[in-house]
Image 1: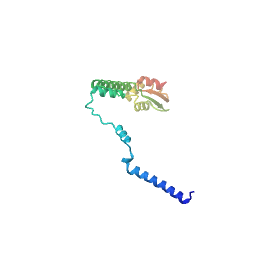
Image 2: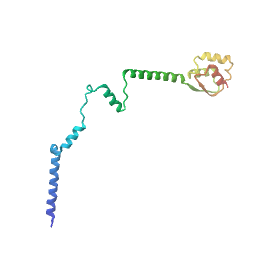
Image 3: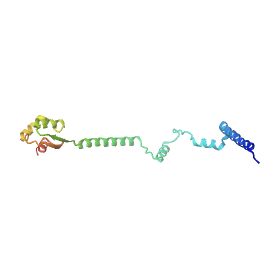
Image 4: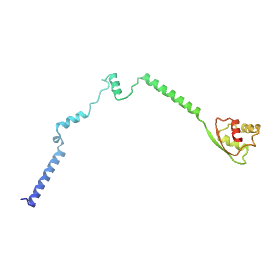
Length: 166
C-alpha cells in the first residue's frame, strides 16, 4: 500500500532521473550524439570546388542546367548593341509621337493681344507679334469667341485662328 511518503519518494526519483539525463544531454554533447549525426553534418557541407580545375564546357553545361544563359563576348556585345539600338529607336519614337494638348480659356472682353500672350505662355505659338499680325491679316481679331478651345502643338497659326474664331 502506498502512502504519502512513498509517493513523494517515487516522484523525487523520477525528478532526479530527468535532471541527470538533462545534464548529461546538455553538458556532454560529444557523448550524446551518435556517429550518424556526424556523417550527416559532413554530407551537408560540400567541399568548395576549384573552378580552375573544371573545364569550360563543364561549367557552361552546369549553368545551363540551372537555367542560366551563357554568352560569349561576341554574343554579349551583339545583344548589348541591339538593346541600345532598340532603346534609341524607342526614345525617338516617343519624342516624335508626343502630342501636347492645351485647353485655352478665352474670357469675355479679352483682346487679341491677351489671347496671343496666353498662346505663347502655353507654347502653342513661338512668336506673339507674328500671330497678332496673322489675326489682323485674316480680320479675325474681332471675331475671337470666348470659351474653352482645345489646341495641340501641331496646329499652325491658321488652324488656331480658325479654332478660336468659330
